[in-house]
Image (cartoon, rainbow, N blue to C red; front, top):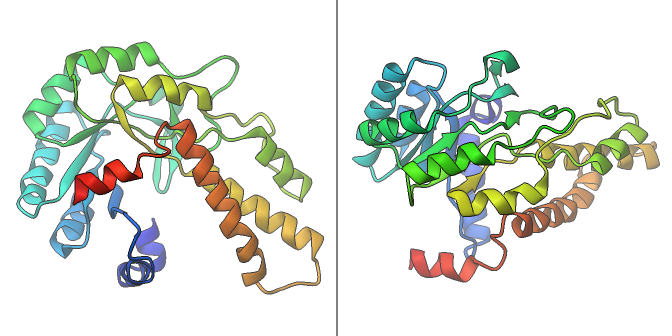
Length: 267
C-alpha cells in the first residue's frame, strides 16, 4: 500500500536520506504482505533486507511452490524471506479475510511448509487479526497453538501479525476530539507479548496502534487550535508522541535495552 501511495523512488529516497542524517541508527527495509511480482521487484532492486510473500490464501501446495520460488530468487541476492501459513481475519491494505474464513496455523503443516519452502521466518495465525477490531469478550491469543508450533520448529523464527493492542485510552481520546470509532474496539492484551516471545516469536507486526497515535494527535491539535491550518505544527507534537509509543512497545515486547547486542551481531 505504501509503495503504490508514495511511489517506490520516493520511499527509497526518504530512507536513504534518513540513513545519511542518522548514521548511528540500525534499521532494515522489509516488504510486508507482498505478492509474487512485488517480491521480485523488491529483491531485484537490491534495496530490501527482507520480503514477505503472503500466499496464505492459496492451498498448501501452491503456497509452498510460490514461497519456494521467492526463496530461491531472494537467497541468491542475500535477501531473507518471511512467509505465512494460516489466515488472519480482518483488513489490511487490500487484504480482507472474513473472520469465519480465518484459520489457525496447523503445527504439523508448519514443519512441512518450512522444510519444503526454505523460508527464513514464518508468520503464524494464532488468533490475532488485522485492523482495530480484533477481539470481543474474553478472546485472546491461542498461546497453546503457538507452543505446539514451537515444539515442532525449535529455534525457528516465528512472526505475529495483527498485534496492535488498540488502547482504550487512545480510542476514547480520538472520539472525544470528533472521531467515531467503535468504543468496543479491542486488540491484543499487551501482557500476552511477554508470553509469546519465549515461545519463538521474534518479530511482531504492530500498525494500527501507531495510526491511532497519529489520529489522536491530529484530531486533538486541530480541535484545540481551530484557527490553525499548518499541518507541520501537529507534526511536531506527533514525533515525540510516536517516540514514546515505540519506547513503550519495546518494553512490552521485551526488546528494550538489546541494541548493543544487535550492533555486535551486525559488526
